[in-house]
Length: 413
Image 1: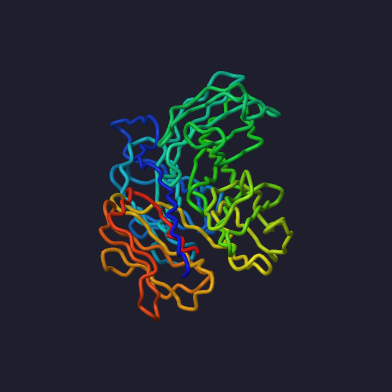
Image 2 (image 1 turned 45 degrees about the vertical axis):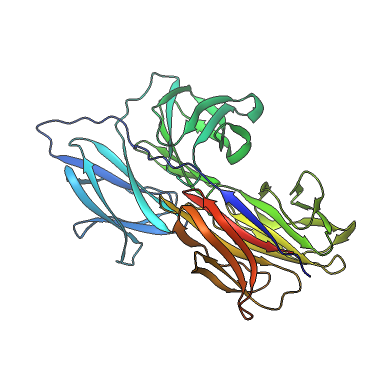
């Protein structure tokens, strides 16, 4: 009789709402504000910004900013559309103070286009210095720490610019020069989320480092926004990859991707490993199964992605599949579940139900379902069934799901 194992992998990031922008000024004699659009997205090559049907900025490319447009101050209802489409992708009602310049930053959260406003009226520092603040717009990444060192420095000896960040800092005065900046998970210097090797802070320059979610949700992209000036994209050049192994007869597996070990030691099937940070792009793989080197074929890791390398079959002829992981968080109060079919020797597709509600169906061997959203809390009955035979392969009761949380149900064995 086959033994079916189940593994729940949880990615949970605490969600905190952040306030954006800094101080503002107003004058009773001034009734206008100025705004520009900053495109801090990867999914939208160009964006248009309009107000009440009037286009304020058009064709703003990723990693760039439009010129400023003058509008009436007060509450304004802005519309963002994919460049040239005329079809709204996002709308935002923002309250703008009179006599103040603003950058409206477009960014993605999951599949949703969002807008955040930042004031552009920070006084320049004294000669010989610059100013920088950090704004984290990535709820998916949770709280982060930001470290800074002079060019050529290393993370282990860098100074913390800010810690436990889940919003926007005030400005830090920094001597002009070239710096290395790292972003890590809060309290864990080994959890690297973004590495920017060279950031030039010019004399009396005022900068905002904006952090947004990368493709997988956990890594972040950076955007250096100079007040009243240009924007520089600092997007992630890494990906996260983990092993999920089901080599028959408790087979062993060890793997490296682009020279980075995917585990600290050889893994014994069935098992789901932890993520390792690897250089993105074409993956140069070295995989050893049951002591023998095997070929995994041509694989590619998109920058900023989270990926699972699923290894199934027997030791003599294992199969490898690279699965894309969406670790962006669901809405507050919700959890996401998906089903991974890594069962050896099972001809049928499988399905997943929670309290008799169908979450995934007809998941073929070596594939993964789309994520389904459920209420966080207790699932009284979680079942994985064979789709054709309609028989239960796994049953669990009183399964606790944290919210917001992201879960993968791995069927291995």
